Image (cartoon, rainbow over all chains, first blue to last red; front, side):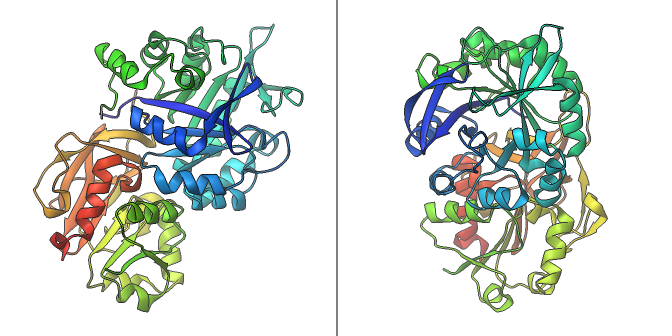
Length: 257
Length: 199
């Protein structure tokens, strides 16, 4: 049986891992390769690297660190940030990334998702979505979230984009609920459940993990395939081995080596 | 030992090469027929679609080279699917080195396609290629198509249905999962493929 994935997310800026609260006030967390191997040894199932400066600054990721990570890591990893064409995606995949994740560039030009799926197969193509609950009760998409000063509110409803992204060729959706991000009060189960109902491809929860029970809720109630978190892992508040023991005790299938 | 990775445009070429390097083997990436024929081991990686890789192999004049290869051949992911006679993905005729057809994994409630993540390996048959991989070992899969576990299947996995995770017939072998990203089990499979048990 396919196991549920625990996915540390490493925000990358200037070749270092950083983390902010509500996408602001980034602090240095350490060297990319060092942290990657530490998480691998701790039992992470997969890693996601977001080059958070790439999209707002209008540049793509620098591939040297992708290659460095790939040469040492024997678990899968996904790279996001500034991938806006097939050539860039190919370079990142050839540097050793297993998947590429697109967010802002896919919103600006949805055909990009199809082009990537045609070139590499849907299984390489992740669509990342940053979503906010608005006053009218709708969830809507934000773009350019790497820099709070450049973040844009779009009219696009999150659930509509989830459907459209799959039609275009997304092989996985990472739904980052921004209201919850970095504040550790739990994943947005209502929003994730609504997304799950429309998502036939793997769905990864992002934003809000603070305790073991938050992961369990996301897997059991929202039925997500993976749960992504950053600050609780970086700070050591949750150890992945203990998290997995807690999940398994609740009958949730996780990889145990 | 001379190990050649066939460069048919598969995007995981780099990561397979690094996985071999972690085992102390420096593989050559090539699309040259003579280099592939002269290799002691040939690996056909593939992250793409069956049709894309088959078309690329045809353009490079490598279809017959692979069909008539003497040295052990390992197909990875789509590279494994191409070893069979036919893939349902874009209705693609494949290399036909193994009997059987590759079909799309069926979607069902609670069953997501692509099959993406870590799943367990169950041994069906003992073979030097899978020696040291414990029953229930975890491997990382990313795919939407698979072959049914036929007579060449050494390790099976399950996603709604049972499917072939590792196959071998003589010098022709395949892994549906990604050994380069499957931790110790993946490293063991690659090491076994390089070993005397495949000769």
